[in-house]
Length: 95
Image (tube, rainbow, N blue to C red; front, top):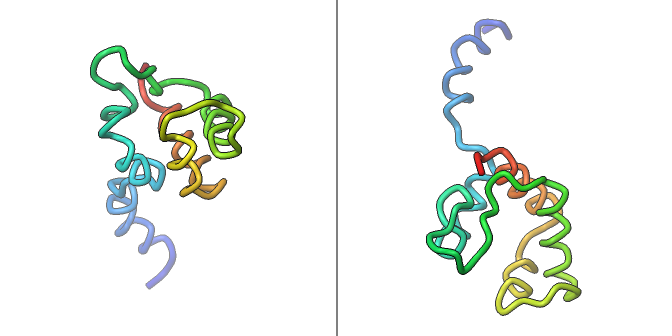
């Protein structure tokens, strides 16, 4: 099958696939809400924040320079690439 035909056949499937950042973020929904919009005011909204700020926060949690109750433990479970993917997903959400 030629490349153009493959692209035409599989483009809808690829477009419908969930981005990696969104899938990784699924473990954060309980506290941070769907698409980075938590219920109530206990936690800040992550949706629409700049990617660089989100990445910096996660790295600060991971290295212990930002105080946290549980995020310092959770953040250690993600690679730099995964942090970037989650941050990209959140940055793309409407605030």
